[in-house]
Length: 231
Image (cartoon, rainbow, N blue to C red; front, side, top):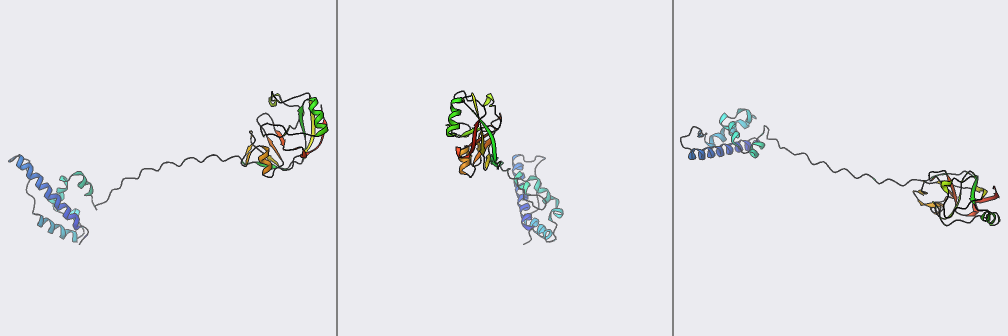
């Protein structure tokens, strides 16, 4: 069967539907000027449409009474009665955007600065104990319990802890920094927080800058080569 023949049959059905509808209007308003004129018989329409379909040109050569039959189709049928009988597809709804990836933790840089001359501010009494017995890690700080230095003698007031910082003496120390991790302003890096995390990942020391100047941190006194009283 020619692929166009079902289309002809569809049109024929539409013609009959239109004729039936016109008949109803005629019953309701017999003798009115808008009564529907009689259409050719369905057998004649099908035969004529089959002959045209075999010639490959249905939509152009159908008789006017058949072509015009589509005028009376309901919207759904008329929508499908399109030249070539195309199928319409509504576009798919756009996919929701993927969520933004979470920011990756900072990755620590590293360097090996060798031996550095650093400074530690404390009270005169504690300074004497350090010169005699060495440094002992404190109990707190940005990087946890550790030994903190700066690279110049005078500690800025912004670095004072009102509870734990004592002054009146300055210790100068030569410290072998080994492999030093550079961490962010809160002493964090991709491997964790603080000097303990750095040591567990193969570092011997840490540097970070909380916003008022770099600080240098070691985990134990074993990195200190020598000390002297600077002030």
